[in-house]
Image: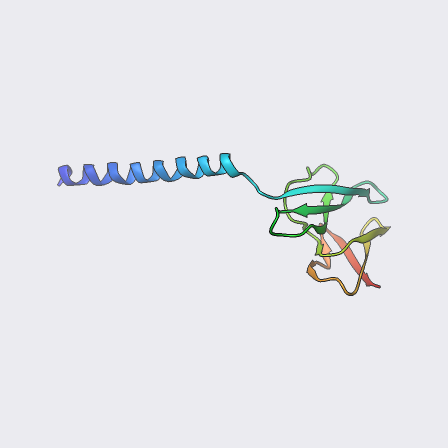
Length: 128
């Protein structure tokens, strides 16, 4: 019984090793195809939070996407999609208070994400 189990275990270990090696190689070669270009970094009145307006670009087959992320002041801005608002046209933001943010966007724009609350911040959307 032991003689049959050993080749099976070795095969499983080799498959797992090949999987992780392949995943690492592909990630090293291609990485994240998207990139973020920060347009504005707007701290809240008390400085505890930061609103980042940025454009996300994921290559030739997609257009630029204006997005909004709200992060705590110590959080590092990552190469990720916006955690608050995503659209296809430019927009502006204005802090109303430490816990309230106003987003002014074009009503004709297509929106992909419109969260009403992020990191304890209430978001007010105004379409014009």
